[in-house]
Amino acid sequence: MHEFFRYRIFDNRIEDYLYVLGVVLLAILAKRIISKFLAGKLLVFFSKKKLSEKKAFFVSEIIRPIERFLIVIIAYTALDRLYFPEAFKITFYHHHLSTEYIVNIIAVTVIVTVFIQLCIKILEFFARILTEKVSNTTDKSDDQLIVFFSDFFKVILIIVGILLVIRFGFDKEIGSVLTGLSLVGAAIALATKESLENLIASFIIFFDKPFTTGDVVKVQSFTGTIEKIGLRSTRIRTDQKTYISVPNKQMVDTIVDNISLRTQRKVELRLELSLTTSSAQLKKLSDDIKTLLQKNVAIEDSYVYLMDTGKNAHVFAVDFFTVMPQTFQAFNSLREEINISIIQLMENAGIELAAQSTDVVVKNK
Image (cartoon, rainbow, N blue to C red; front, top):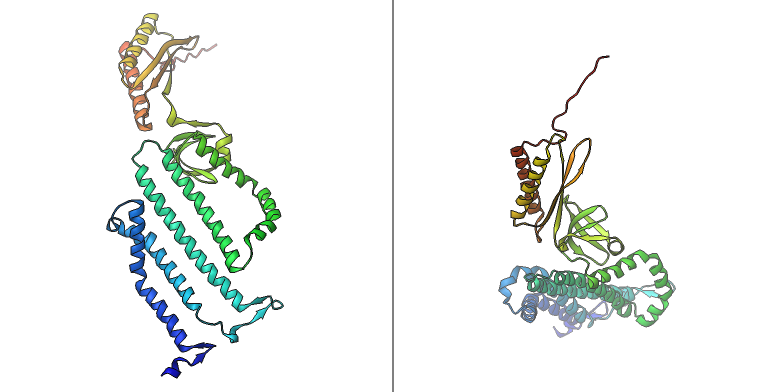
């Protein structure tokens, strides 16, 4: 039996194969226990809540990435006990590339990829916990901060992963690689000039805070709600319920009207009254409209005056400002209420609009 375990297959003893197989099976059996333990520690560290309260989230977002990383790292460590078989050692490209070298690159790439995925999941978990903590605050810039830096650090992690593959997979010094890529990086920077401008603009938006997530803005010919401020573009849900992406550079260079920051919202109404309306009727209508607007608690300031008169109509200007904050639905309801009330005042006073009655006279020569 002892000789059997020392029997070699592809330059390795059977007992070495059994050792590697046993370690991998043990890792598969113990991965869930270890993953739950580590995930629980993370949960206590970040949110101080029990694991059972977010079990579904942990299984999909935290535990499974930890399991994959444990299996990969343990399998890689166990396989280090084995020798690469001479029968599989094949060289390519003038003996500068071998199968052993390729396998090592693939193994390192898999480990780094799984590790970066785990770091990204932990980052998303951390961002989710912070989002829950700041969700009850009135300052929406905290939400913007979390989303922005979450995306930013994801990009940093991906870059770090690429550098780790270059260092440990291809066995290249990162410093020399970065030096060699300096000219290439300059060329790429010129080619991606617009993307870099958008990235810089995203930092300007974050620190200057002309708008935050949840604000209603008007930019160019679109009006909508800011849903996300990314590294490259700002996503807006328009009042037509479409979803548009505006490059951050345009959001910085273009005049942006932040409707959410308005102290008041203005309504302009122009009444073109018939020329048959007497001066007494005009004076009474003006006083009645002023009283109507002053009694409405949703209106702060108002102006009512005879704006113009001529051969076609008497033009009344009715301007008033509503209180803020106010939803768009409430604003439209108020406008409707005021318009109907003014029509009722005109009906009670017997005042007609300029175009309400038109006499057509036909002369026969």
